[in-house]
Length: 80
Image (cartoon, rainbow, N blue to C red):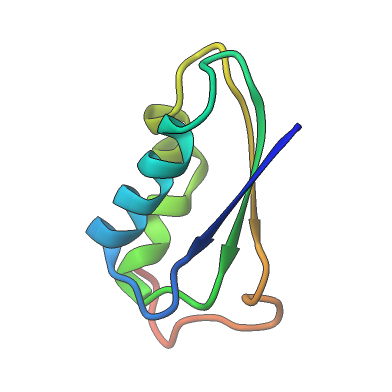
């Protein structure tokens, strides 16, 4: 398993999406990857971490797990 760390503190949608794409792009297409997301993204950053967005960003041959390290018990004031 490859572990990738990204910093998403206060990051918006485009920044989170790009950080995720960069992390995915550094590993083989058939890798098993855990992406650890540090920091709490801005409310508009969360959609880039939803399952459909993550699946669209990764090759079909990649197994990808996203862990929101610092989001436990936190919720945006309004849904993104």
